[in-house]
Length: 631
Image (cartoon, rainbow, N blue to C red; front, side, top):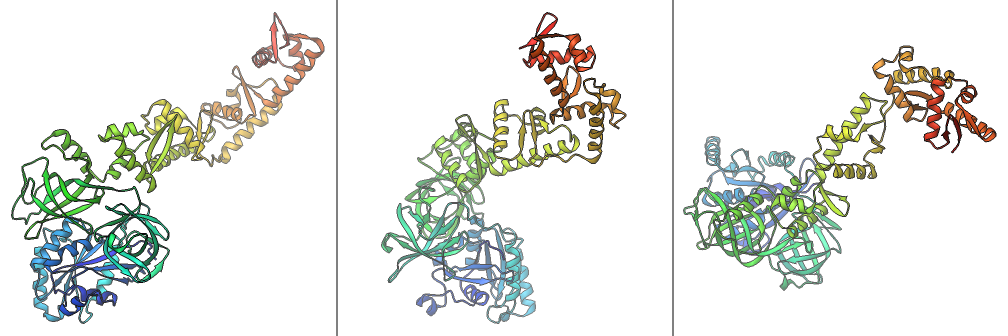
């Protein structure tokens, strides 16, 4: 079963059958107010849930279609993963359908399905005509590629097929992230006798748990989660994407407003000035102008404000530009949030766009440095942008310069990425280096791949040298940072470092042919004592190409079986025997010459002199004239 959580919503003109459709899909009636029952239209948001063929249980939200209740529609649409654009087959696209379409486009709802409802009221020819008309009118909208489903909520025709279409489409939608900080816009507030304050909403991010202490913004109130319900069932935790009812302790119902947001304390910013990228709808009748008063909709919040254009005198219909909005009341917002602007009076949707940041002050118009900063913010969610800049380990100072932001704002974003486990922290002396987790993991995977390939190609080398590895990886960091990061990777058990070599944790299994050749060398050296042959003369005997014989000798030295002394290779055991015998003679005689040692070791001067010089270097002996004494 899919453990991710999704919200499916409706949109469309009044009386096109949205509520009836949800009832047919879920078996639940979302009209809960007496007035809604009497008038037959939805006034407030309605909620339900259904089980899909895959086993997914998804939340459903029914939004009002009447023009007077677009505010409620906006509150519900902000959390949707899929929207069902409901169009009555006997009427087609109506004015409110178009405004809902505009809102869904401005909010960036990721996926949609066009539902031609009430097909029981029309014949086949009319349906085909209506379907063609709908396709034509949706060509320049976010629904231009949406699948059209034929249903009758009244008779049940097409309901099963619609469920399957929803299920299939959800497989393409990325669910909200339960790993980030808690954030839930509140769309209902009420009180239950014996329990106190209850709020409901769609959890946009994070995981909410019993006993958790949360903030209610922008009021800065602190409350504790007393109990949780998801789909009318009591739970101990709720994940992002779920519809949640939260019983709060520590606040009175009169203190909580619809439009407030429940969040993890000290995580999100609250302000009255927001940096924006605004898109004026192509269908708008007029351009947006400086200081125009508008209704600003964000999540479940509606606040009045004035537009402050930064790069142009007006924003004509169908065009976009950078601006700020100067709000009359503070709101909680985060970079990347989508908003909608509606005309102050009479109210209708005119524009929308993306929040770039919560600002501390009003910016100067037409200033290139200001516009440069806005362009940087517009490139993506600041957290995503910051994560992209951390494609290698960087300090706060490095990042601040690269992103043209101050260190304080950067620290907040770094903390958010840390909480959502999207970065790694390394150290360079006392300085923290921040590395995007995905980039760090990709880099390690590449490093280990290079090391493993080198081990397979050169199994006797005991790994790849640090400098060769640096070259292979194309590292441009300072030499110091490269060495520090490499050694910390060893300390974190990602791979092993032995001296100047980097190895995989698993090491390498020597091929049978290589083992056979090594055994051949060992057999020869077993009998030569302190008169080892030249490597080149034994290579062919052992079946080793002359170009590779040095590599075999180096391997035996690394394993401690051989010792290299001025171009000669001796067995370590033979060197140890030579050492013991020399010590014994020196203790007895006090001093010895080269000729005596040659006879003692039963070797020639060719090997005796290098061996004695080796023991001199080891401070076992010292040369005095032509004699050796103990050091």
